[in-house]
Length: 149
Image 1 (cartoon, one colour):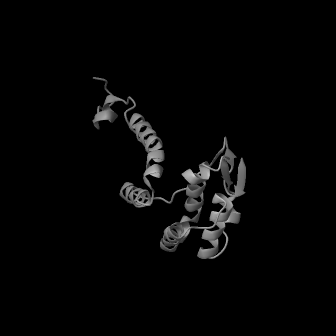
Image 2 (cartoon, helix red, strand yellow):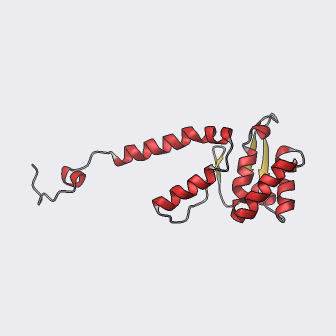
Image 3 (spheres, helix red, strand yellow):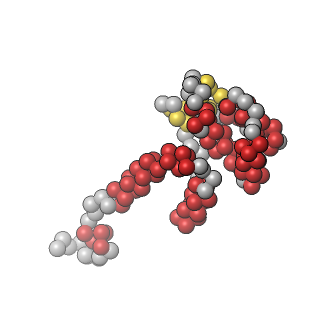
């Protein structure tokens, strides 16, 4: 298992950042297409560096190296091999869905396939939570005046 400190990988200007994550995670220099892809992502959203690092560490190429890569962040405790996700800003459901759509567009087919099961599990959990039995008055929005019918 290879453990890398996330904060160390985030350093430098965009060019240095991209070259560094390729060398430290994929153990090679960036190819032209990959460099352009990550440069465009980082230039469009400077706050995406953490997601870029985690995505590259979980990529097919990184997994083919034969050793598991764990990224440790100083601001999150590793629990059972996973790192706690950063807190999301308060967003409306519509804003959150738009952000999710935007981020999903940057994933390749394999990345989308890897997220399919966790997204479905999340939706099922939310659905189950909303369908838990409630009092009839609450369930149908009725005021019963304290009487059971």
